[in-house]
Each structure stands twice: as structure tokens, then as C-alpha cells.
Image (spheres, rainbow, N blue to C red):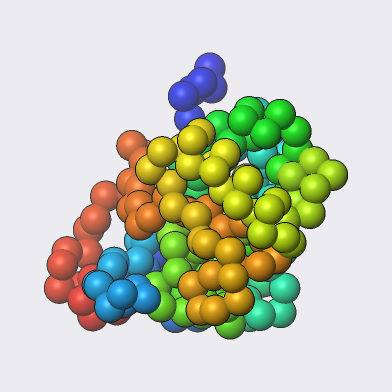
Length: 210
């Protein structure tokens, strides 16, 4: 009998992946965020075998895995082919966005390059929470495009009401602001599922891999 509690994607230790993937994902590496604070990148990832599997898998009632992994040529080359890897915290983001979806009462559209992005993605700078799989850029809610102060501010308020711990970028065109989408993030979450592989490498091996 199949284990009803088992998530269908395999959990992998990023330190055990081949070098090209480790160089793109930087598992466990310490980076600085935009305030200069040290943050440790995710080490454990879900392995996505095919695009079809990403299309079929629902992370929450309203959001499929595929919506969080749409990237273009700005993503590191080793991560544009399958299998692909996404931090395990992506499931927590999907559940949080479900609250936002309920608050809006309509469809929520995630932008391309607006979900998970690796540390080597051209848009990933200053320890972006996108690298943790805990941030999304939403360009449209229902029939409303989020490209005005009114639409962004209104939906940002809805997001913060639905997800009190979430952070949203303010409207504007300066660094750290946005004028063509709503950025929502949960901060820096390191998730280790119950079935994550044991660490046989030890801390010394982790430092060598980084």
C-alpha cells in the first residue's frame, strides 16, 4: 500500500548533487541580504523530474508547482533542464498564497521569473528571498494588472492582512521598490522535510562543498 503521507517528489541533499548543479544552487552557502545580514541558502531541495510532473502537482488547492518555477534564459544553464530542483520551503509559500487567493476571491498570476530563482539567476542579488523559494512576484489578480500605485497598494494590504508575517515591497521605481508587480515574501525559511536524507557528510564536508 502506498504511503498516503508521502509527498510525490524526492528530497535531495544539495551537497550531493553534481558540481554544475552545486555551483548553481550554492547549497548551504552563506550570502548577505540587502541589509548586509548573513543568510544561509537552502540545502535541501525537491527534485522535479519533468515539466509534466510540475504541471500535474498541486502544492495547494489553487496553485500548481509549475507556477513557481517558470524562468527564462536568465536562469543558470544547468537549471533550465530537468530534473530541476526547488527549495523545500516552496510548499509553505504555496499554502500562504492560498490565504491571499481566498482574500482576493479570484485568480492570482505569478510572473515569469517571479517565483523560485537560483542564486545564479541574473535577477538574484543581495540574498533575495526568491532563492529560498519563499517569494513571489504577482503581476495580475483576476482582471487587474498590478502596474499602478492604487492596484499594488490595495493588494499589498490584502496580502498583509491574509498573511500577517509577510513582507511586501512598496510602490516606486527606486531600488527595493516596484511599480509593475506585487512582491510578497515570507523571509528566509530553511525547510527540512521529515524524509530528508541524513547528513553523512558532516560539517567539514559541508564547508568543503561550499
